[in-house]
Length: 170
Image 1: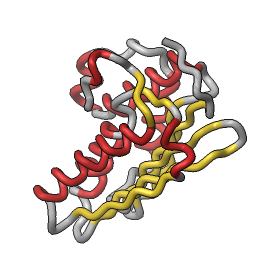
Image 2: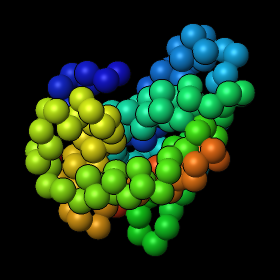
Image 3: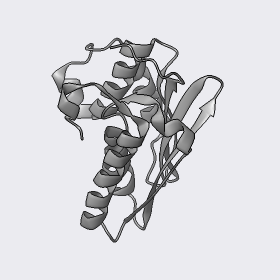
Image 4: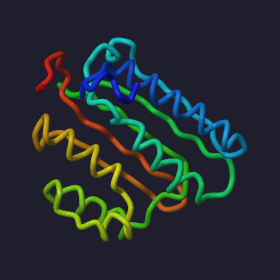
């Protein structure tokens, strides 16, 4: 699924299938700490999305959120329409982030693509998040991308905003 014959675009439905497959595999590995739910309106599932948009955010939720907090973890994926945008959220009940770390990540998101050094990527993480954000902005412009909310010891929410359009910029 992730190769998609070299095409960058897939349906949201296909992206959700890829996300579900990834979560099933991770649930087999971490059965004692991971549950998940996916709830995206059927109407939205025919719209196009860049492939590999959800999986990096799910991976972050698991490895930086749930694995660092004791107890059962939940990753929830939701989708809805807001104004003329499609919003897909990846939410976890993991450890969350401090206000300083959240501010640092938000600052990184606003930097131009390619401005991070390899040392930044190794030290700070967040590469998948930044990659998703910059790819969305490259195709759709600065009104779109990834937004974050997080509270330490409560969890994090990553919101992907893309235009509600059947047209794609190839």
